[in-house]
Amino acid sequence: MIHKLRKKFILINMMLVGAVLLVVFCAVCLSTHHRLREDSLNAMRQAVSYPFDEKFPHLEIGRKERRSKGKPMPMMPVFVVELAGDGSAASVRGKNVTVDPDAVAELVDAAQADGARSGRLPSYGLRYLIAETPDGTQIAFADTGSERQSMLNLLLTSLVVGICALGAFFAISVYLARWALRPAERAWQQQQQFVADASHELKTPLTVILANMGILLSAQDQIGPAEIKWVENTQAEARRMKQLVDDLLFLARADGAKNRLAFSRFSLSDAVWSALLPFEALAFEQGVDLQSEIEPDLWLTGHEGQIRQLTAILIDNACKYAGKRGTVTVTLRRTGEQLLLSVHNTGSQIPADTLPHLFERFYRADPSRARERGGYGLGLAIAQTIVQSHCGRISVESSAAQGGTCFTVQLPQNPPRSGIRETTSGLGR
Image 1: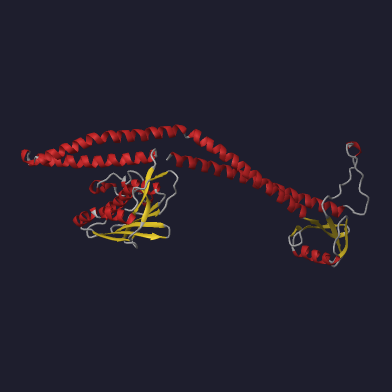
Image 2 (image 1 turned 135 degrees about the vertical axis):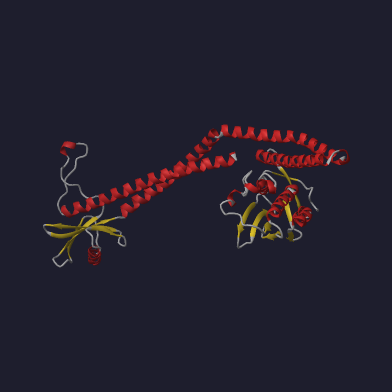
């Protein structure tokens, strides 16, 4: 839980930082693009009003009082086309710019066809400005190559800075997550330790109580019928409490993850069969038709005891909710590198809004019938824990089209070896 909380903390922090960086970089890029556009328009305005053939003012660097007050020379490649009365190009002027005469008419036509006083001609890599002067209509053209190069450099710089900033913020987020969640982690560990210790300590008195109840029931001739009923009820409640203690102890140990599982290679087909057989009598008593489609000779590297427990939990849950004359189907097959175990039961459909909560601890889709069905809402939570410890995935589907509810478990034949202690006790079984 703490590990997931730490991941969420880091993810949320990185998303916020990424969003802020994206907004900042977008603002910088838009501002720079607007500035480059204005610089290009100003250069074209100066080119229209400034004769290129005159001698440009002489500038003296470092002596502000002698600096010329004339207009500066445009720094980007700019040329101006003067139009005749019929709108054709009359003359072209520019400095340090070579213009193909055959392309001038095409550029003028493209600028006039655009229908605006200023704009861009992307196919030519130019920006234009149409100006009305006392000498007639003039169209100034400026090369946008410097704009594109400036924006490209800015984007590359922003990308590098953004990656470096995200890397730095990620390292800071990891440190802050560990520091901020340290009290919660300590409290969580203490809570899990308490649950584990309490569950362990409760097992002994419950075992004694169950043993005493068994002794009393073995001497039924010495007690009356009413007392026998009380003893049987007490025994049933003690068994339910012992099952709850066992489930809590299992989850506490799984949360603590102090001991690595001893995985071995075993026959999954045999394990599912051995978990299925005890439910045949129970299903017969409940009027449930228990069917199976188990592919033989399927082997799995994992914890055989936990896989049997997982199968028993799913079959027991299916038998409880299949209803009278219902059907429970257990299927085991191979799909590629995955082993697929599914348990389907007929019965009423589970509401869609409750499906995401079925694997939560102490959650029951129908609390009003919890006492009738038995259990405390821990079975599916334990099933999910077992599947996750085997690097698998468990899911549930329930719909009228399916005719009931189906739990599906996908297990890799050979899960990753990290955190696993392997044995050879299951070989050849």
